[in-house]
Amino acid sequence: MEEITLDQIPRKTRDLYEKAMSALERGNAGYALDMLKQVIAVEPRFSLGRKNLRIAQVKALLATKPNAMTHQMASLKGTFTLMGAEGKLKKDPKAALDGAEKLLALDPLNLPFLKFFAKAAEAAEMPELAVQTLEIARPYYAKDVAFLRLLARLYIATNQPGGAKDCYAAVAELLPNDQVAIKNLKDAAALDTMKVGGWNDMKSDFRSKLKDKKEAILLEQQAKSVKGESDIDTLISSRLMEIQREPQNMNFRRALADLYVRAERFDDALKALDEATKAAGRSDPQIERTTSLIKVKKLDAAIAAAKEAGDEATAAAQEEAKAAFLYDDAVEMVKRYPNDLQFRYELGYQYYLRKLYNEAIEEFQLAQRNPQRRTRALYYLALCFREKGQPDIAFEQLQKAASELTLMDETKKDVVYVMGVLAEEMGRKDEAIAFFKEIYSVDIKYRDIAQRIESSYQKK
Image (cartoon, rainbow, N blue to C red):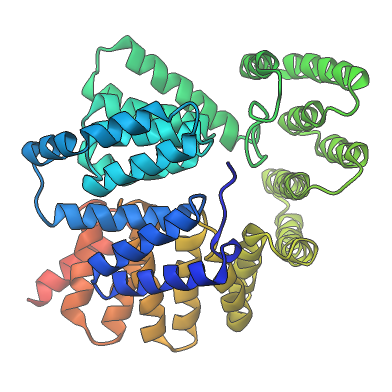
């Protein structure tokens, strides 16, 4: 089931969601919960609404200081709901998911309820919802091996090997002598390296695109076995023969482009993608996005070569060419795909780099409707408003972002840090120090956080 974004839901439902978020920001969690439940009932595919519903539920539960007895009582109360939802899992996954929502409304941190929600979300072809919900609950189950393994498996299923690697690293730390845990960590790390290295620059890897799963597994195994130029050349030859047999198979053409990039044959990779577009008979935003990434890689290779040769002038010229390309490409992609919020975010960032703050704000305001980019878009909105001399409006954007971030990851550190800076600039010194302490307690090396905290103690 395909997820939808804020701009895709009906106007009335969108108004209800926005009222719910306003209530949540004012601290009226009960009112917000009621409205968010209505939003999800109307639009079950609206993942951002479901995420905020879950965050509100967890906050409300944690305020009561739950314990083992709390969860046991919830399990008893939800017994019949769970049984009924389990019976609908195969025939009516959506109804099962609705049942799972009712269970989490009883107790959003109940482990059996969370496991069933994950199962129902997968059955409804919405595994991202399972990941989202388990991520919110993860701090509560930071040392639960079964929970961490379930989340890791879901990360792999949704092409997020970096998340899986983090989970398996936590499992390996808890079970240092467990060979399965060590193997899982190594496998996840290998997948993450492949993705970061450009093997899976598409929105999702080609395993999910291929109808023949055995073929997908074979392709991935071949990819993992590549160790040198001769190996890559062999795979390229194999892929070319497969394209001759099945010229309409886009996955073979994309895999060929990946191999060319691996071999740093960037022009050949671009040609392969151009031929893929011609074979498809239409433009494809994912192919165009990958084409742009390859052009950037090509420029990066030229910059690295110039620096290695000691030719700083050429390196500087290539850096300028890269910056110009990123800007022009962002503008062109928004023209071609005005409803793609990822492209809107990228254009907003390019405007921000050029200090075109009004233009950047317009793009980030649109981009925040993308669940994957919402918090980062709010962060850059805040930076833009700050540069325009509007710290109060900037602070409001960061408050929204912080309320949606449960883990102190890099994004939340950035958000909380700027909240501290803004509070300081507005003369709210004690509030600023409180924000800085949040980061200091988990990452003493973040930016100048240690210096700021130590300086505050010296002043006292």
